[in-house]
Length: 90
Image (cartoon, rainbow, N blue to C red; front, side, top):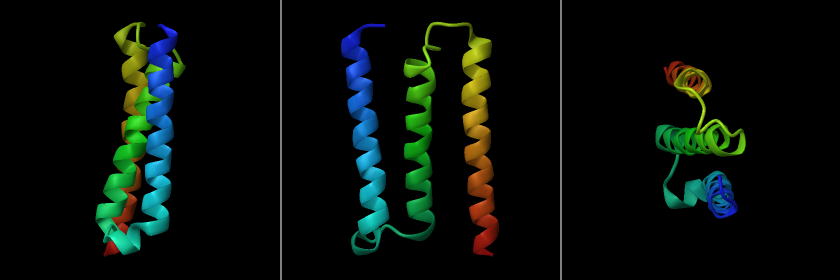
C-alpha cells in the first residue's frame, strides 16, 4: 500500500464526511429528507466503512474470508438500520 493511495482514500473520507454534514445541516433546504436522506447517508457510511476496512485496517490484500467477514458485518448493520427506519415509518 503506497502513501499516495492512502492519501487519496483519506481525502475521499473527508469529502464523504463533509457531504454527510451538509446533508444533515441543509438537507431540508435542498429537498433531501426522509427515506432519500436516510438512503443517501447510509450509502455514504457503507462506502466510508468499506474504505476504512480495506485500506486503513489493511485488509485489502488478505484472504477473502476476513474481508468478507468485516464487509458482511458492515452490510448487516446497515441493513438492520434501514429495516429499523422502514419500520419506524409505518
